[in-house]
Image (cartoon, rainbow, N blue to C red; front, top):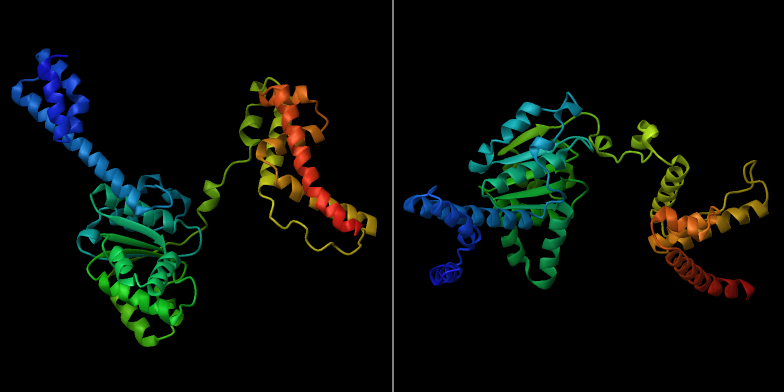
Length: 372
């Protein structure tokens, strides 16, 4: 590297032109090879810097938007229901409503994709340079209520007014208190001329009874509804299409490709058991059922209660220990478990010891209480 190259790199660093710095070697090679003239070389370097800055700014806006998921309009399955207004939604993707300072209201039953569309429109706005903020309506109201408590309400309302697009998800879910209704009124009023995207399970005409003060309701909703594009999203729930597939679906379709079916079966069953235990509620011991043909004696009831108690204890173990305990309970040796899980037998034995010690520690106080 020549002295001139070193000086140039230092100058680019001082000017914070890291986009040029990252591509300098490649551009110099093109220039030395005769592919770029002097002006072309300078133009390409400037474009590299512009591209880097645009990318960084986009990532920063995307992070500040606080989307639950980064979804796009292109990913949405409009064929899931013929009742979806696909043409209207795609037209909203042109973002003319954003440039006009108008709002969008997406309403319909649960699971039809309202939140997906709202975030996708927000993502489009971010790509065009707009600042977006996504939040559940309940969280926004909680933030403003907290501002009353610690005297930061003015600061918090300014932060919610600042974005070009504010997305209020799950709007009008429940009856509003007078304080919440007043905060909503102030928020909508302050954002006059700035876009909102609202999702709701209720039609706008059903929002009025949720406000304790009819005057506030009329004033707020008149401003909101009459300047908004209303999209009725109807049809079956979109969520079943996103549901994780059964772990046996894909392998059973290619059963011939499974080299060791018994081992694969044990592995899948073990994973399902671990998932089941991981989803166990904190209180699994419900009321013991009365004796019945299926649970005919007090001994059977006690056994059922013990099984539920054991599930609760196992759910407290780390996932790996739960998995190994499940295999051990199924009659497999540490060597077999190690082979199936791809770990050493010593690791299996160590996990078993730790699991037994933890279970013993949990059971000891309980046995003492029962003895008393």
